[in-house]
Length: 373
Ligand SMILES: [Zn+2]
Image (cartoon, rainbow, N blue to C red; front, side, top):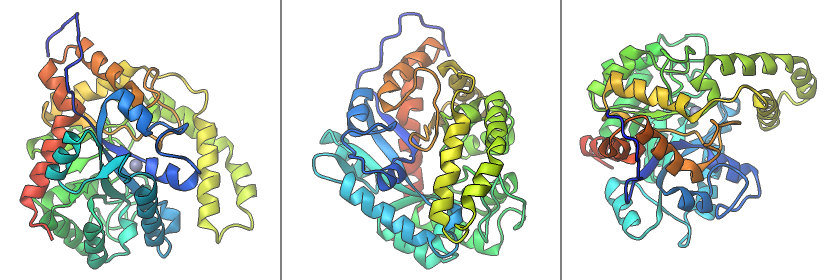
């Protein structure tokens, strides 16, 4: 890094972000992808120079075990109807397709699953999702699956069990990115043992700067970097500063009674429970201490200095987080982030890597290592 004062934005910057929950928002709300009140729509993408995006097909673990796959398919259908349209965005399943989409000035949209519970313990279903164009999977969300432990649940499988190792092995083989965001430390350690392919944490920050289980300890940042993997910095203030995380926890716990009251009589309706939980989470996150863009950049700097400049990138979590750092209200703000990275002393070449090249190069390595279908 070098300090530079007169920062001018790199021309033709590839902004490629590794995680957003826009698909869920488009499913839940009657929103149009061209323009909506959330973080990421086509208008904001164009304004912010966002050229490519991994869209998470997230399913609340509350819908497991028997309703999760259905929801994932419904989200894929939402993406087909609302996003993969000739005038809007191009669905891409390889870096070659992404390059072609960029040539046509189209937003290149990738699909990942978020939550291993979606595949219902079935390597065959994993293949079906590959056939549908999915090119990565977050092994867990906030709860353990039957084969992998989550960072935010009580350990059960001691990381990955035999089925988990089989699934991870298959992902590596077919060229699906193995995403360890949300996974427990033991799970990550086992993944790194089970396979030699590069792995990613699509939307995770550094635990050193914000000590919560959801963030990565330095040893994994180092190892993911050494194995030519990828780590996308998450924009959620609660994952950037512990103080904000604690505030939200406290607020949320304060709603426990209300949540319980509203859940009564609905315990067999996971959709309802999921919506109520999210409603209170949004309320718990409102009005907490502001987090600056530079606080997010602290994590990018730390990941770069621990894992290397080639492993770090962006994993905004847009449309999946109830608040954002000041000045980063949505996808239209990427130029401000790129400028702030330059202000912090990253050279142009480094800014290009962080904003998108590292993620593209990582996905290229995953597809080269995989055999495809
Ligand atoms: Zn997530």
